[in-house]
Image 1 (cartoon, rainbow, N blue to C red):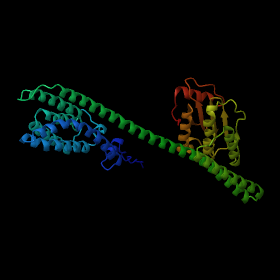
Image 2: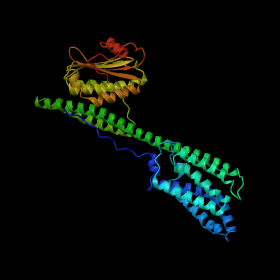
Image 3: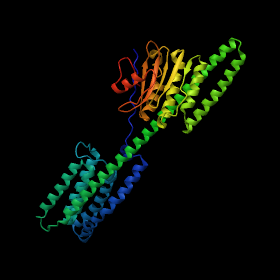
Image 4: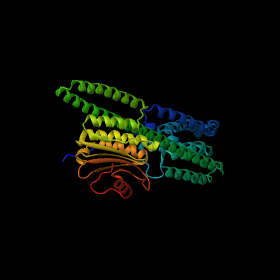
Length: 420
């Protein structure tokens, strides 16, 4: 027994991964913009640098003059390497930190300590930048732990000689921490929105492809089936010596092929329209050419406008299946304000079950119009296709299948019958 094993679709890279790709021009541009804004805030490092210059004659001053610029460079490098903090997703738990980011972060912390030792209390600005950078280097919860730990350590340092209480540092830590966190949350929402838009765009493309495939199947399937039937009829007429009738059928073949070509062009352009009366007329002609007695309605004014198109497609697809598979001698089409039924006296479900694509497309059209597609075998032989308006209480149905269709629409599907 053969089974169709569908290969898994390749995993689509997320918008976040695309945005953070190191080779992506957009990623580089975003990071450079964020790098600029990160660099603007480094003006707070001017105070420890100026203080180091004032004490250039001391070891601490000389070390500070070197360490403060190095700290700023490493900070910007770390910010850029971590891929623009505000565009980075950070989760409180389960976030996998890259080892190279941690190494840079530890190096930044070491430089902050050297800056504090060399410059004194003014060097605490380096510790503030170090603590806040933990919010976008580490998991968010650990970043905030680093911020609070820095605040506690700063309070303890007030006991050192030459140090004094300065609550403004807490303002910087608090304001900076909240701003960075809000920025990261906003960045997360932005990327989620971008990814959702990308998914929606892909779904719209896929839906349009499915619509085109369905329309082309319905158009070409019906037209080519009629052309095949008429070609066979023309061949039999030629063999029988009825050349005049054969010429008529050949002329019809040319007309049908041109009509099919025009339908395909209109479908591709998206301007194709289908009418119920036109489909009934074509169905009657095609059935007659195949030697099948057709019974079609004459009055269609009762059909609501929103059901005209799905009813027309029902006629086209069902008659196509009758011509292809049924080997029927009669085919009846019954139309009511709420339903349409195409019934033949052919071989039944076994032969008709193979046209899965057409019935699947017909089911989609019915659902889009708020209707239900019902297919079943008819005793003693035959097959019927019904599209009925979907509602809690079905409207009155007419014809030989009315009671059965209404019951199945309300109750469910009996065994042995198929509802597409």
